Length: 412
Figure 1 (cartoon, helix red, strand yellow):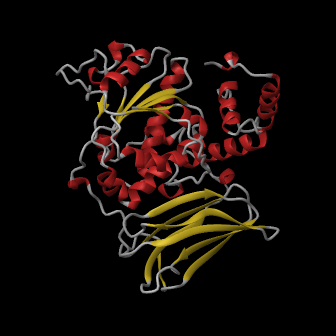
Figure 2 (figure 1 turned 90 degrees about the vertical axis):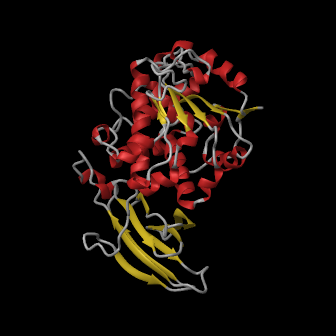
Figure 3 (figure 1 turned 120 degrees about the horizontal axis):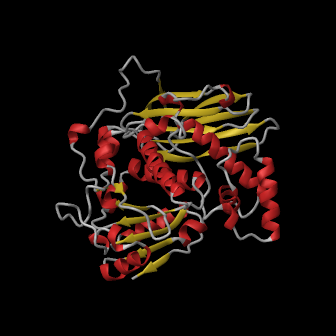
């Protein structure tokens, strides 16, 4: 769907012209009308809101080095072998079809074998790879098939697992508006409704409208997939004719199935006794808070954090105070399982402003919390010579709003 084929009314065309003009300092030649309209639609044609969203996303891409270093980045072996996804080709309109055997995602094993940053980085790499294929096919979107067969909700009762999934959803909504042509969730067990009731809070109206959910009735979802995907490139398991040379109906040679991550891949992601780290230690006393203030003078800076607690979780959040003394939340306060997995993240900073990082232990009246932290403000992005960023400049999560409108199609 090229920009010349866009069907816009007069007011939308005016908004597009205005939007193109005010973001001309950051856009590239390949940022065509269709690309710009995605951001406008994501913000209901509010030009100022779309500009903010686009600029933040372009900054996010620089932090992750999406257009340079990420293309040649080699993921940890556990991710390379056990991150479930793959494709056997494009649908009838040229959109890549991504198959995700979601039950094969051993999220607990993955998070014990790779950092949260690497999980996010791997997801970006996969998305960018298929978007590049879409562009070469003359398409601007992708089709995703999530197979929820044998889905186990209890894995996501482990808070770090739930947190990384939410981070990925927020990242997707903030940086990939309107790239989804359609999403089919198949073999959804009854318990999946519980998980989806949480997930959909982080998805906007457009994304929800593209999702169809099917229970374990292959006749229904296979028929729908065959209507969109030619049978010669659709694996037999999904209702097509394609088989692996060994007869595998799931085409595991092209679609990584995931599976249980061997414990031999497990690593210790944090060692407070390691002198090579730059972590500072302190004790957050029971019933008390520990705060750190950071004054940001120049625009284009980022506040990044990496911390862990011993034995117990802690409540964490960030506020900022502008030059007029108005205080607002920058990262919402919540209890984080930093005793299980390092809590790592980054936010773009406004300037001038003062950012207050808060570790809140007021809810605990019995326990002090041992805290190890490394929190800094980066130099302005414009001053950085970005080719391949070092690990510490890579954000783990992007905070973004959500939309509770539910337009999901659920098929029994």
